Length: 315
Length: 301
Image (cartoon, rainbow over all chains, first blue to last red):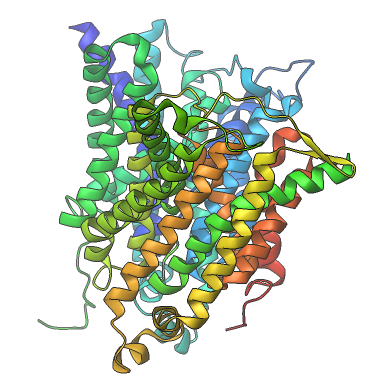
């Protein structure tokens, strides 16, 4: 029984961390219509930034400032936001496809930096021994994970509530106006490029936060934690749950992560172990089919966007 | 050493050009950035491998090398068949996925769907062939010295074939009725439609030309490098860089863009560690978007 319970806690920690990233993507795609093809890259930047800020000091590697966890998370958000600004400034005034290409490119480049710049990132070995903030307060792995689940719940709740307020605010309504009709919004004196850039940077910062939370939980970071498949998973979570709906984003995260882990379990039982690469491919095909089928047959997702009508309009 | 990098850059650039032509055409005529385009290179390369296997099983002599080249008529015939099969796959993908989304769904949904399709194609190939590399032939080649550089006969063949294909495509686009229609649709689809151009047929032609070019580029890549399931994935950025650099929709721009990308990638190893080579196309994209977003040969909008 405790086995099931402790697995459930572990599962929820990971699913909700991914859910935070899905919330960030929802601000970009759901509410603003920006295509970010490099989600894993921004999460990686956050993960590495947090690891460098809170990790133990080491001779061969830069960083290791042993700062408090919260500072690490703030740094993760700042670093991911800065990376987003680099591609955002170059592309957001141009055709919207260019953002997709540039975000794809920065994710590849971040992966290369993680692999090759050993002084900063530890190379393929990564950075290890990142202190888990829950470990200092709790005895034993189960108590630690339960406590960390509390931290992740708080972070996800904060992101959910904060984004909910932002989206309702005049700023958020302008975002939707730009998504629906850029020319109309611009003619009313709104600056679409600036607002898009703000939404893109804020969304990426939230992805960085997710990266930092992930690294704090597993205690190390390596280039293999943020593979391109992660970007697909985050996207599928958003599309399945329903874009432009933050409850849908979190629901999709838990649901798709459940499908992913279950399919991984089944595939590992069915496919012989020497065909490991093929079983990974089978899982990816399943998630790809889910995504394309969702787009074709239920594009609004399970929950989808709620209609908002001005309160001045009487039905 | 410098000249050797230049020679290698031109060779890999030629293959990138061939792939980028199809990408730039889809970006212009179908009006979306197709992330699945480079997976058509992988598909073409692997289907040629299967066809080569068939031919070799029929008659061992077909695999015998032609002159100094490493491959025989089996690969030539296989490449033609692979081009046809890849075009069929592209048309099928259009019918099943892209055509349904074109028009009513948001334009970025198409880009997004192409992302999912790319993942599917790549992993289906990985499931079928496994992660290990393949080669079309195990023949050893003797390099030829041209001045200060050494090149393989296969590489000279790749350059020559690319040049011939680009000239043929140029003639098609300027002399044939379909080619003129394609340019009309690229310029203004609704005006072309009212002028009696069958836009749906042009869409199919675009897929066929783009996919055939992709398949040939994939075979040439497999011939001069190797076949891996992530062949296409690693070419996504170089292809987009070539298309954007040349100016989206410009055929000759894509060719020049491909050469620039190939040269910059190969020359970059003289200044930066070779581990960062795959990031070069990204830096090119950023630079061109900052300073000349319409591309080298595109017109400002």
